[in-house]
Image 1 (cartoon, one colour):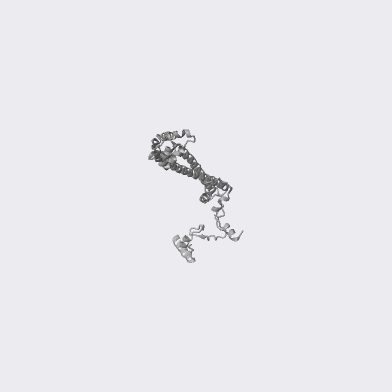
Image 2 (tube, rainbow, N blue to C red):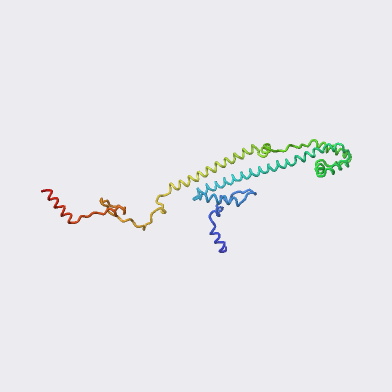
Length: 270
């Protein structure tokens, strides 16, 4: 391995290495699903929760799985709805064509020979080609005279159908039963995701509460100087209020004060 590849591997953030965990690597992706989108979900979820320890790793792995399944259901619902819309639009575009074809039925009632039928089919161009594909020319010669009547009967029985639009179009797009089933599945996944997030919060909070108090990270440095002890005017020992001791000096009497005080006491006793 080259030095460039080694340095790139060392500088890769932890979020990009999330798939090294077995739970993430074993994820089953459907053929149309993107591995890049899944890796992005893994990285963003791990950054959000920062799992530490086997319990949190397990909970985060389950959370990623539920989030991916929920996203899969949403994509499936979007694709299913888009398919229904395209189907209804296609049917709407066919309705006018089927109406025009049905209106051509009476023209073929009077065609008693295959040549007359061929002329009518050629007259109507693409419509004639469609009719010929539905009711082809009989292989038996004795049945060619019934070809025109067969075409007319087929066009007469053909159902045109209405154009779906307005409120009925929306009801055609959405199947109420399937929609309710889909909503029920998504609600169950939402509840499971909520339970996992609450459990993660509980685990992290418990770790914080029951962490030993003598955490070396919170202890004061050993070589930190201690504050000097001072004596205030009341004789208390161990006070460290430097602002107060600087303002209140300890008064020490002078010898002359004792002498003057002694004379005053003798005068008072006399």
